[in-house]
Length: 385
Image: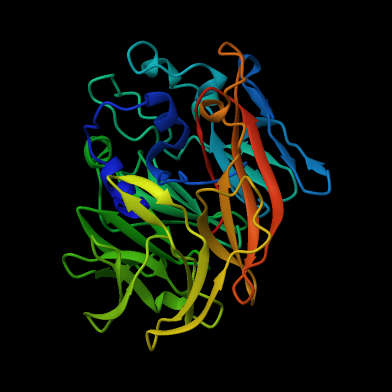
């Protein structure tokens, strides 16, 4: 099973018996393998505040105290968002319903270090039990420029996109009950400029959040990436075969890919990871190649094997563009508790993600930043992923 299909299946109401602790760390995403994959300390839940430490390769740090509700306007671009189950051990058999507190809400951290709670964004599902395991939390996505955030508004029973600077909030025309969210979940895809929102669950559609116009994606296809201005729209089927949606029709691109970057600034180029081999649902060879594709023609533009691969890069997921020739990927922080054989079972683990830039022409990988936090379970969202 590939990561994208795995993600869609993770949003089902029932889940097979699995390691719930590992699932909780990633929620529906993230494998999503990565769970996405991602990187990115200390949470003081008792005081309903938390400090998240972002460490860059050079050793510089940023931190922010989380106590205030997100202001109605005037918020700087988002650097990331996360939730941590109040820093407490998560057990669907015992204490899930106790997480309806301020410290269980999504928290947004800005590029300038500001930290705010987002009570309007559905976070942890409190209906979970050991026999009825579902997504650990409602989806939240950040546009690649960090200026807009998409989330599920339980109050409105709709998905919302909020502009952090001017405070405007747009709601989808479609209503979705909390019951539906709990039963079926939803995956969100945000265009780089934050104007167009793709919805995945049952059927798939793209909403122009500023006009309310809804574009339905043909049955059997799922929206994967949306360009600025709402075009192009890249879709895939249940076998990860890619297509270009335009004029109500899907034109197959003749390629298959699980991990897709955002579209480049000109809206033509898409990068994806390749080389992974899977047998009996297990990865027997990890991804080792980055490919770029012209989505308007279906032509492969470049293919490069990874070079200078950091030892911690194992299951990367791909996001936006760092530059015209570099794409950002992220992977789980390697001291995540289920991967640490030497960790004291009673000590609070370090969770998070690490980001890297991959040159699409040479395959060279360089580290960008590390995002970690102390918690037993949680999830983290980065812009453009």
